[in-house]
Length: 309
Length: 324
Image (cartoon, each protein chain N blue to C red):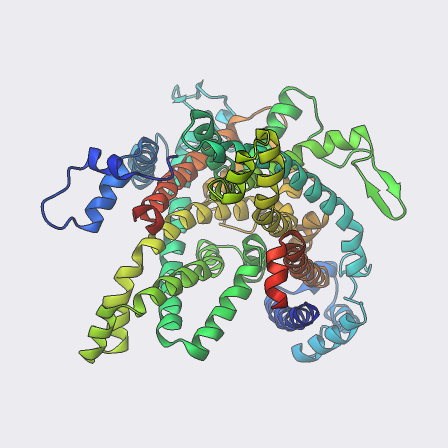
């Protein structure tokens, strides 16, 4: 990971455009200068594509009980079914094709991750902006809550919440939002405090624009870079945390298994040597998380104002 | 300093009271523990008797006040399942968790700091890039899956190390320790490695960042100008200065490891308090869950306080500022 991009680097890749270069364009050029980050992005696009297209590209619908033949259970990778079909990654204890289960599991894992990050982003950014804009007591109170929230380990908060709420995709998303919103709130407040003092905000105030309009249309767009970085890294966190919770048995229900659930299901077979049932879902989960982290890691370097200056 | 400590302790009390009330109310909403406790054939009268004997027929606020009254005296109620005091159950399991967390943290600092310095000295060298890419891997891989893969390779395929349990322990008073026996170490190695892998990545990143910040400083230049050996410059002058962020992160992470031990302990059937928490959540054993949370939150806050105090010990500058 090259942490600091030098000026020569940037110009080598992107010939400076005439006039004022848009910041987004410079970011894109900076981003694509790193091969590792591009690799992460390509992987991520492939994974998202596979998850979206799962019902069409999966060899089998793993949740259609009728298509399963118990005689085919626990086949090793490359094993042939009674009907003659080949299972590339083997089958699990209920004769489900592991590859198909992974594709469907990716859907659940990614959906939970995306939805929770979007919700946490919205709530956190709103709280952060309000705290920064109004300051004083509102700020002190909100940030106190953020501090307390962040002092508890995420896994513990999510675990207790799910113990109270029960199983379910929606409940897992709620738990993940509760765990994550505070990061966005703190980052949004930090960025908004800097922006608040600038002249364009003063100008907007002089035009007697409403507080809501100033915050959403003027302050928020300029606070986006750090929030985007946190969103990517949090997406990886959310997916890993969801997998962990499902592994512990308090996450998604059996009817909508995520990758974490598949790994947990394979655990009992692991000890008797049938590694593929939890090995391959684990690889899929790891690749997804690594791809997101590679992108997020490099985005942080690119967007860090210390490095841009 | 004393004023700071007292203020922090008061804050802790407030946080713990609020948290206990929230958790108490939340847990109250979950299921009916009577259905787990009474046999399926029990009559309604028998159920009512159990409910009364546990004080579950009182209104919530009254239950909470009774709980708090006893908690102040160190009594967190008895486990619904075994009837033993909840706090005793947890304290019995605590040494196992602390042992695992300590060994894992020690391992990650011992490996992470040298690798981090190495990566910080020459950030562009292929070796440094390899270390940093490896560290992305370390915190990307889901912890429980890493543990399972270690079991697959070292316990199932190679058969070198046990897949679960603590192995032989040596009793030191009421505390059993695995680190004192060879068999215990064999059992400890895989779970500790699982945790250390994730934490090591973090230590590497913090050390690298601190090294890169310290290298251009005058005191390093001066030490080199004096003609000191590279070993002494790095081992004494640099190490002392990067120790501050490393100790902070390691200290705070220690608390995270204790909380996260829930996962590792489940994978390796390590009989610590994390495993107890999961079992208690599944069995709706409310007193144990609440007592566990109170204890862990207290531990975390204390840890934060100790890290803050260590700060002033390690960095004379903080001490001087505080005095002014």
